[in-house]
Length: 253
Length: 246
Image (cartoon, rainbow over all chains, first blue to last red; front, top):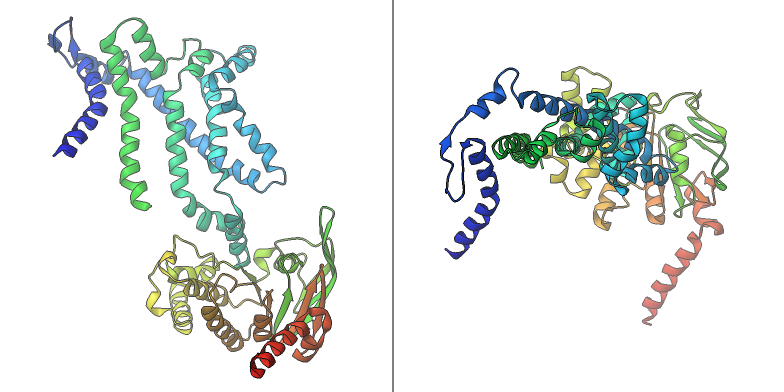
């Protein structure tokens, strides 16, 4: 019984902040010390799905940005990490991949900003896309660096001696064996891009309004209802990913 | 000669791994190469398989120079110490792998796989995943996967190194029997003296990147360089002491 109560409290601690976000996103007029908002409305949510709405453009762009970043970074990281793993000077190359994380992404953005300004990429979606790739791509390289080991190389060699070309080895052995890792890397790079704020606001100079940028903007404007709505939208994709992870990935394991 | 290796030399950086190495092997014979770790055995096999390039020398198989032939077109299968079964495929599909690469017809594949599994006493395990098999069973699947493509040459790199003594002996007998039945030409490298004697028709001793070959067991056993005589003397003295009751 005591254990169940403790479990309930523990669960409530996790759920309450999200519940509060949800209440705020459908609430109107909530003066202190009222326990609940005085009015309830789905108008903000309806606005998200309406054409030309305040948040739907940010939501859509953020989704396209993060999904494309995750796909490209995962694919590039997978291929690059293989080249690095079998290179005689692999430690030196791998050290380069740690560089953006050793100096923190926001400091990297400050360093990159000058080049982006000169090249005219500052304040553009393409610029933010490229800047986010600068942190997700090395992450994917580091992520897969442990995957390409002596055993995988032996597997590849074995397929070759059994009569397979490199493409057959990739398609019939390496890809199926790495599908779970690819999926996890895709999720993680998606999340890095999805929640990225510092680098996006520096390179985007306020013109590129991804969902995290919008949340901070609403918070600064003290518009708690819209900030809550944007916060809810920000949590939706990770929740879906978490559910997918649980449903497919752990079942595979 | 079916396999002819001529004056192979290989270096990694400043370290010379193979030095002017030559070997002849007739078809349907198994050559046991005994050597300590780091003697260059694996590098030799990788050069024959086409997975490494030699700095100098040539390899000929059935009167065909292998050097210009890429590894996947040589039909020379390399087996590792570890079975390296594909974890996403069951036993049956692992064995069928090479045939699928060659795009053989489905019914033909099924028939060949069925026969091979029966020969290796694996029929009951056909639908199992590799992680459901014992070490010996995994190695048998690896043999089946290699033998089903009818390789011109089989290269075995200490394939029983990870097995316990009893399974090892069973596997040695099984491999010897199957290779004989299928008329397989093979190079078997090991650092285990008993295994080398048990598996080979002809023998080789490898040390410091050099290979010395013996057409028969007598020459192999009587060469003082290999250390076999010391080992025989050791066991003999142990036996004599035991007999004398010491």
